[in-house]
Length: 370
Image: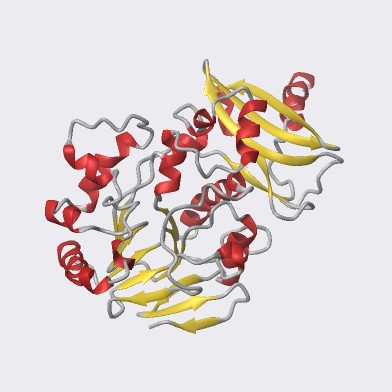
């Protein structure tokens, strides 16, 4: 028994918790500045946090053999200094499917940009989670259409919450879809123009390059690489930016397109042998395209109709481009834009239920869109 107790002491010191602990555990006199970062090296798992001890940033780290990974439970900060939530690492990671049917209800939001508070409020407003960050949406599907990283100062907290909700949703018969936007891919391939300064500081404190924090030897990096850039759920096509005419002309299925793009998420050189990849990673690609929302959108009507026909869907849902303070429907309701200025207080999500579309405000109020 003495040996077992000694083995768990470092885990507890490093911010791990044991099964059954309250996710709203009060913090000690130090505050959590960043983390956790879960990294793999030499058949070991390394877990690192950065704490703020009265203005002094200190790295808190521990490691254990890879074989003991299942014993790890992480503590993650929230926007409330008095609360954390707990995360259990997944036993395995697998590439997401592309096509889904039979979802009874959908809750959709995008472009959170590291704003944990706005994200939490919308999840609470829609009945997706409770105050303890437990899944309460039953067999519903939560759809996140990209750009949950960059700009904000609680990116890791947002990512770990999505990560943790996936397993909780599946256990209840629901699902979480995390479709990548241009900013997730920028973080992986080293385009750091919009990274909050906090994370550059963290990388330095951890003696790591920023991209290695989301690299192939990190838990979040491996997880992000399982995600798609396009998914079809019921009769809606979900994509961060949109589908341009050159992409339409190729007539690649969503599955084929995801398979083509995925190996290059972290490619910083962008020197592709396949010229179509140049298109997919350009401003005509699905996670960069803004053509639906040009000054004269009528020129895109034919492109939208071509996409609907080819993918056999009735609507396209995007983020990426703010066109109003509210979620908006354009092209006679064929395209729905879910990107709003969360940081300016114009937060909304989209609920699709029984064939109707509702805007959901942080207060929980719903307003029918279509």
